[in-house]
View 1 (cartoon, rainbow, N blue to C red):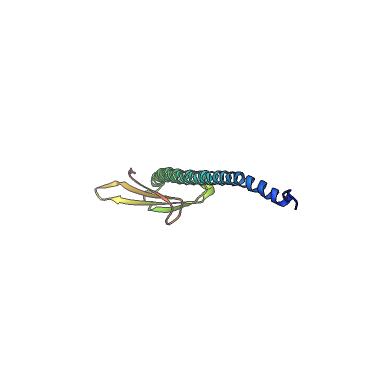
View 2 (tube, rainbow, N blue to C red):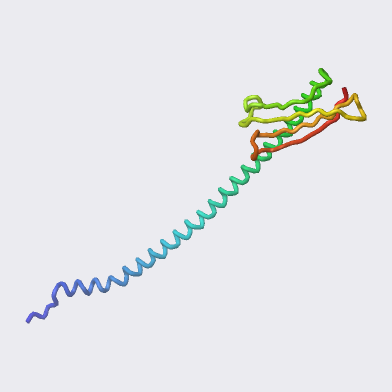
Amino acid sequence: MNSRPLPYRRSFEVCAAIAPVRSKRACRRGAALVVVFVCLAVLSILFTSLLRLAVAQRGALEGHAWQVQAAWLAESALERAAWRLAADADYPGENWRLPAEAIGGRHAAAVTIEVLDVAERPDCRLVRVRADYPDHPQHRSRERKQVLVQL
């Protein structure tokens, strides 16, 4: 009988000795992978929150710009009505539609000018204006103004 161990038996012992080292490495790799996934999840949540904040800020800025544009349109309508009343005391008012190209914007506008007689002062007219920018039934900014114009 041969007293030498068989070669496959020796390789089995070597593999058995290496196996715990490999499992520890695999465990460390698995833990590192979990840490990477958690970091990616946190970064994704942070990025999504910042993106939502940026979109909300852009919407608020656009709404403010619409409000300023509507205020300027209302002022222009008051001046237009005063000029028209100076030329014609019977000016009844008008619906004034402005295309986007006329006001240098991306949206069209609608302005309503209404001229009313003042009972106690026949030499004056009450001018009411309503400016909508953009000219959309739901998404718009509306500005109303009125002034007493002496003829």
